Image (cartoon, rainbow, N blue to C red):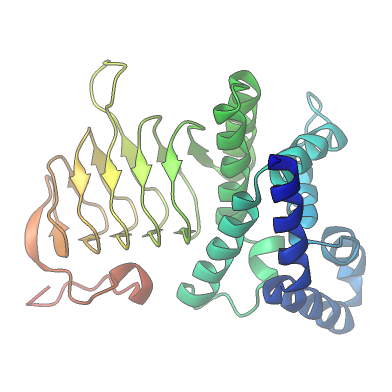
Length: 274
């Protein structure tokens, strides 16, 4: 019964998938503009029938190494994306997040081909699927290779929502028991880490719509309320109420969030009213 539902879901997505249609259009335009990229664009985009197939190819290619060839990794990625349609749906939400929030992103094609934050996030999603399936050693392998390839270290047990944007995506660390809500934006060198050596719930819980500035460290089993802002370089050690701005080392509340959706506006300037 589950197989029938999954097949029907994939069919419906394939029939009406404006994101994938647009990516393919942009791919053809890219080849016309820069023919030297024809091989890359064809193999990564135009050779595939669905976004899921293209994602499986792209992730497996980026994570392959002498220890694990891309063809074997692609079989694993295909299995995950075919078994769980929510992975492809999350990838579309992540892509839209990058396009909407990153002023350097002008096409849907860019995250698929060039943005390591998006690619690392999709590698994490497959690793998380493996973790939930009980295939933990393979999940750890995906984590290791994503860290080596992208500089993004997300534990496969961490729980991340949809519509996530990781801008620049250098030196990102997200720990095992961390939870990140929907529509969160974070910049480079963000850490969602634990404290001490306890093995239980020890990492932050980030609410929906939160903006985390570059270099911010959020440590311990604390909560950051929805639609809050964490200023760049801050060290957060205590709970943050919803819709507030925190800054400093250690971080303290310096004002309101400044808008209803800080993760979407990406405004990191601390005004007098914050």
